[in-house]
Length: 503
Image 1 (cartoon, rainbow, N blue to C red):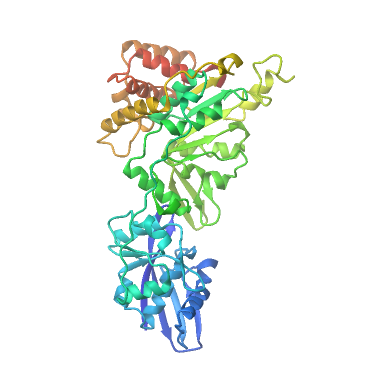
Image 2: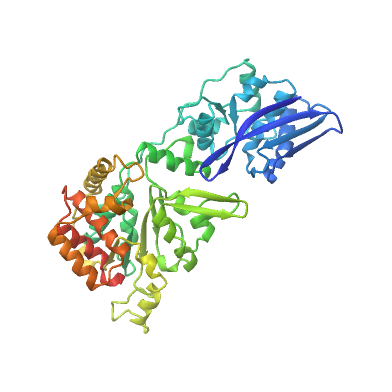
């Protein structure tokens, strides 16, 4: 007697359908799971045995073989418990087999039969919808999975509840999607005294998703500025919410099974490892660059990060995706993030202060910032110096626009970009434009072209730097409600690109 159910195995943010076959045969009684399972999947047989025992269901005195197909695909995670249990229940006639085969199942079993939430319910629901099947998962994962409206989601609390539902004795209502509303940002950009140039750079970075490098003495407000960036970013669009939530689902970060409209803000410590930043480890899980997808990656004390970690950022910044390579698989994760980096001008932090600078000044500055390679520094669209704020200025009343006012301008600029790239769905912001399309939308007027040509020749601007200046100028023009890029836009873009302190 052979019964089958379905579940998924995760490859990056993709969920591949897995057939769970259960066969009962004559021979020495036993319970074997085959098909390249990891330790957690192999141990599922003991959890299934105990959970069925708690329900008063005894295993037959036969040889039980569970095969996970395709057999050459690695199977990892505790979410295989529920499909294995359902496949076995179908084989012994407790649950109708046709009901089981119409579903994709994910869930971990406790020894008393409770169903525990698992990571990845959202991509599992998408895979179920693609296969024209329903999804059955633990109650704690139902609100998350129900966001995929193309499939019915059933979320029982226990294995007994799943059996009652599938047998028709006590049908369950479909799960409803949860929602986490966008939170109000307690930090306002107006809280920052002075630093008007830095605030302007933040606005440009948010409007076009341009990477920003801030260099300044300790206490000048770099971290304070970065923390307020979230308050001026627009809410995510539906497709961005889904992409971001799929990554967070795989990492178990979706609170209360809901989807947040707020963009991610990740700030890893400078001791973070390569696997923590880029992804990897057990199961090739997403790293910080992917968890910041469609949001912000803030890296404070940028030169203090290991050189190897910094250099691995170069490819994700350019391509918007990262590939975690392993001997048996290559896992891809999206990572279109806004990188905000902050650094002191030197090791002691007071390079420009003759009274407080260390004896190694000014050579210590070159050594310290020299940890950031030229190719990586070239990928920052905006580079600014954040000077120290005078004590007298701290007593002055708040000046400048509030986060609400800046956010309105950013949202308006983003909307102009959305309309501009309506025929190019792969492009969402100016920072992603390249090739002929960049020339079409960002070619400056005659005066602007002459200025850009003179400066590019004077400072030997690289081809990448040239194009990044055009992208930033296009964003400045959008904030200015200008259809064409003009000389003032080019001049401002160049002023950020050619900052003396950033080299």
